[in-house]
Image (tube, rainbow, N blue to C red; front, side, top):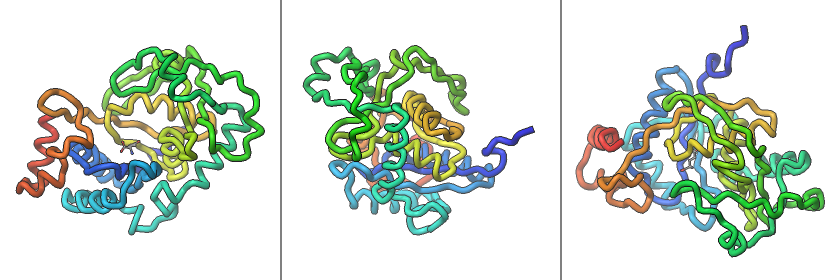
Length: 286
Ligand code: GLU
């Protein structure tokens, strides 16, 4: 009998992006992540997902520590806690992403895309749902000069998805899931023209290298899981298990976003709410 990695040692993670104040949705997801790590007697890793210099800001990193401490959520590895995979800020881990980019390039999983935003807008079929990127029409798919690039900068690099394949996984909260490559999502960007590794690549690589056994995050990322499973498979890594939490919604039914400052943990704290009240409110709004 083979034991899955999860049966051996549980490693979970908190992966906030410092692009705004954490809100009710984060409070709930991170609380569930912390609880599951505790129930499994495992560790929880804090990873600061600060890759995008245009959107990330040190003030929000500080706010994130403050909010986590106030909620009573503790992590055992990550910034300020050391651990074997430090440092845990994605902006300090470029070499890992670059190594993955090279491997994907060498195996022709990715290709350089020179389409401009304008080209894409003109060709775009409508995005499948409000938060998703349109399916890439495939114009640069047949480009053959990938091997000529020694560095990724200057073009977008896209993952060539296996059209027609259904990417299946069983979510520990939401049950069986399936997304069809080429239909539910198209060739997605793994490295941006402005030389920033894209979210999908960085997260897949980090989850693998940090030996994460279970990813707990919001249900808005279910489809991204299919993309990340493709990256993990192309790189030869075993995937973690996934637990996607129900989304917390505002009174109009829209999913919480960082623009909802009124629902930020900081704001609720300043209004005198206790951590328990914040977590109850978040649970009520799912
Ligand atoms: N950093 C991402 C976010 O804040 C979450 C990534 C993940 O959990 O995979 O939306």
